Image (tube, rainbow, N blue to C red; front, side):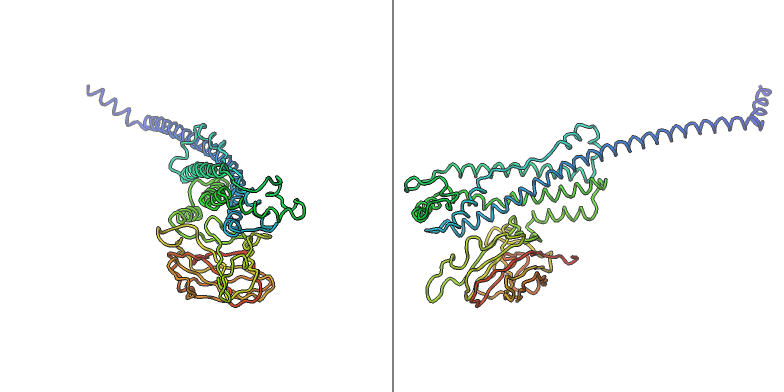
Length: 444
């Protein structure tokens, strides 16, 4: 027994034996490390391939969204113009006892655009392919997954709003039109310029009865209230543009720009004011509406509105917002009001406290037009006590920037009239154009 122990000890302590054992262990460790490295490389290659596959799907979805963006922009522009036409027609024409040819043509245009039934349908082919690909799990927990969800939920919401709106349009179109006049030419409503001389004057009673009936009034009123659809278009456009930017950059997580974009969308839902009132000469119909007021009496007599403005006194002309007042007046005012209500009582209002300045870009038709700019909150009285800031327009585009604190009567947390243009003691007609009205934040 003692000899066996001695033999074992001798062998173990032998340097060559220890060296061979060390080599063997080292080789085993090298094999294990090699296997682990190979497995890690294989996992890394697999993850890289999955990431590449996922990014290809996301780029495909981004391509679908670019098609959606074009459709949304067309729908937004079309519905915006339809709302403006319907607003002008409903406000300034339907109550008239008689019409001229231009007014009937304008009404015909407003009615034609109002009758159109349109739907937005998102291209989901790329998203459907992603859901069936097996790599959708790679998105779990990533910001881009939440962005996709918000986009397609928003798309479905638009579908519901459009369906309800189009059903109201169809209901209005089904209303009867009762007129006592004898049969008329089929083109009398759409193109009165084709009527025989003197015939247009004979049809004044028909026109008055037709446009006083329930059908055109219901139709145009329905269109005037389509602004919520426009706001949903704008949200979806912002989400689509953000997603395409991220997909092109291969990013799955939000950066500061993305978080700011989403914060702006959420702020609007919570009653914040939209920064762009007029952009590139287009009034933001989704958020603001035009209004006009004037000195209603002269020489003790009431002056009808149509003596001051035509039905198209505010219109989009050559990529600018053009305002025309066709006679002088002791005072007249064109102003832009918010559409949304952040309160249940009083005038519509929104919260503009995150802004500190307003930018205006405008020009006059002749130059020298004197305007007084003002703002009002929903509780300000209409007695002329608001703060007015004077500008004098030139024939060229000029930019004007004002601190909101200078409009010291207006509470920005409940702003109703975001910008008013007051004209005092003017003897002549007035035309001016606006290209930009934008609220600015401190860091802009």
